Image (cartoon, rainbow, N blue to C red):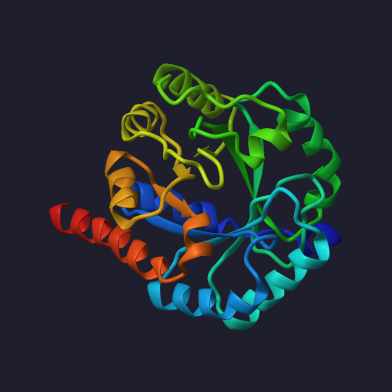
Length: 264
């Protein structure tokens, strides 16, 4: 029997795609679009390059995004391409039906109750009836050498860059709590990317997809990260400065997947 709820029942194709890729050893590449920073005049260039590069996902969000700008960006993307759009919300108000999915983020590296559960309670009624595919995600901030916007806005301390054991235990706790993905982030504009040692340590200790972002500005660094165990690489700030990096980084990441298939 058709009901209002069934009309909005989302298809779990994004997360299933991530799981299938992890099982096969394939690596994913996501472009982070912050409507606050990426001027709309450059959007067409980014979308064209993303299509040519076969980017896997767009993450859409930022710390200070307003909803009318968010909706405009999502609408513009949908007009130009069919790359899945995943909300990466900086707060509980950055929600839109125009996206395909949302990272339902719990900031498990911090001790701010609002970002562990408080904001989730506020947004739950909206998400319950939305068509968005909801991906419960353990979000972990790692020290990237400077205080980033996200650490300031979240009022939390990042995990020290050399504390691999803390990162591992935090990620394991997130998985045991039922979160479906771990997202380790050094933050926008980080001076230092997350170390490959920490990535390898965390990746080796969990069975759910691992996303890495922050401070990745070259194809070489992206490749280092996926070889260390990252399943999905997110790049934003570097692409805002030089959109042509989309092609270079995407080719480098997907080449690792290609070689992995040949070996297997």
